[in-house]
Length: 150
Image (cartoon, rainbow, N blue to C red; front, side):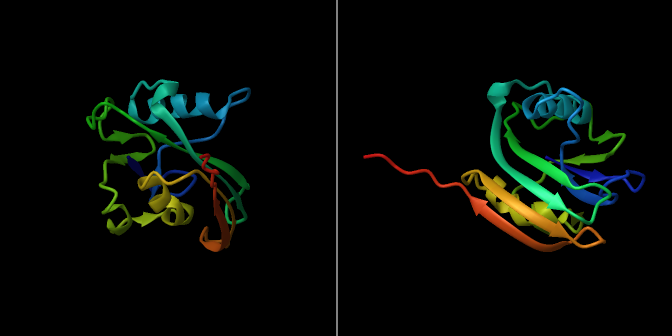
């Protein structure tokens, strides 16, 4: 699921992004995923529905640097409990094969990592440096590999 952020939002206005937000004081990533998912969509999710997908650091471009966690969430229905709009924009279910070709501008980091997320590839780490207009200047991306045991 994606959100097409409204023109009035402070961050990524007019861009397509994933569901999410900032950690609140004393909150961990898992709690934030559960809270933000509920606040933006109305879905009530449990930790068992959440899979860690990756972690990134974004430097420059925005007013603050970011450390961003990415997670996959399994839901039982594509019927969004609170409807297709919220205070931040329009919620959209997009097929993974169509997400990069919607005609909407997608946030730059998501353009790079979406194929990893959509194809359930191993978790990743990235470090991105952004230009003043919030575009990737350069990015270092590393997927985790795990040894296989005989």
